[in-house]
Length: 47
Image (cartoon, rainbow, N blue to C red; front, side, top):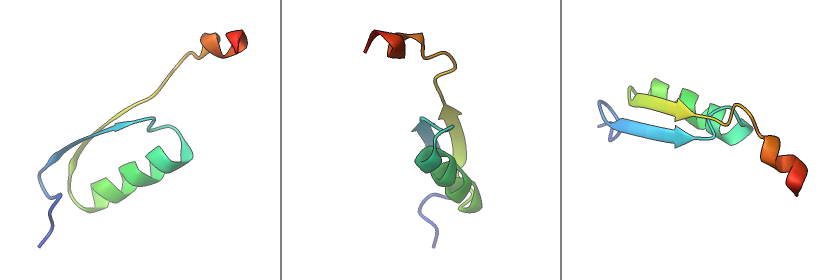
């Protein structure tokens, strides 16, 4: 039995190390995956 099969999963930070690996694992488990990422992190210069 696969809990994630057919489930909708949203992964924030999908371009990072953890998010990317989680995204791939969810696809293996046949989940309906949507990933988001920050394209432009200009605010980092303010830190």
